[in-house]
Length: 316
Figure 1 (tube, rainbow, N blue to C red):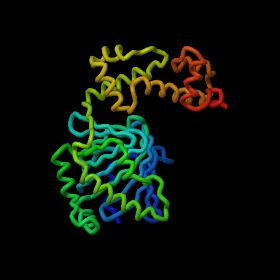
Figure 2 (cartoon, helix red, strand yellow):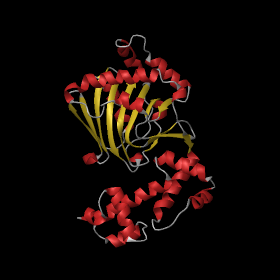
Figure 3 (cartoon, rainbow, N blue to C red):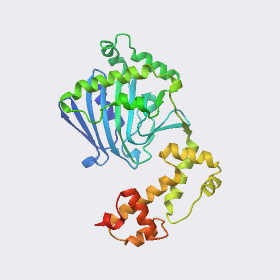
Figure 4 (cartoon, rainbow, N blue to C red):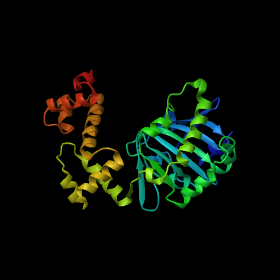
């Protein structure tokens, strides 16, 4: 069932991949030895599959590329970890992160632009509306997938709902379902999500798009922040350098990376410190200086707060 939908992976995946099958589950391994992660997929109805995504990608161009598909696809995305972005027109990009839920048409999501944090976990439901419509009507007689698709097509192509208690309730136990009830549970959740979006009005959603120029500035700011971790950089310095207001810079950076600028930089420093400790080529004192701390004691305190142990304990 759904070989037409599985066939689309041949068109949008440019990395090496392999597919293994176990009952109604197919696992798509991305890259040699799962270099880029994997997707566990389940065929739910004619025209509908769900994919649980767990990927690590520094350069998305190594894995995905754009291609036109001959079918009309709806996609429902839920983010569990990481961040995801896609272009919504010639000059705007939308980001969503942990707990966010989005329904979109494939013409929008095919222009995937980035996984800004380098990793992503979540699930995606692919729906071929022309095949699935009649099947869904067997369960929900008055429901029309084609109408939802065309409504999105006539507006901005997507509906994004930021993380909230209602989403948590609808998603329920999607990520930890007992295998004995997995198939009927996923089918019920698919139907529930479609009903959820059908009554979710635009006034209850919140989406912020950034221009490509703003995204480019954020990327240059990120490069400045990590280029020399020992340097002291201020918001004033960055805003002045790129001709953008401090408020806009802070808001844009948080939209892309999900965290305030200097919280993100601090965590980057400490993650980098972990990698340096793992490498074993530098002393703790040398690492402390390399990641921008004025003293080993300040580094040790920050490291313990973030990692849960001291650098020396982590090393051992």
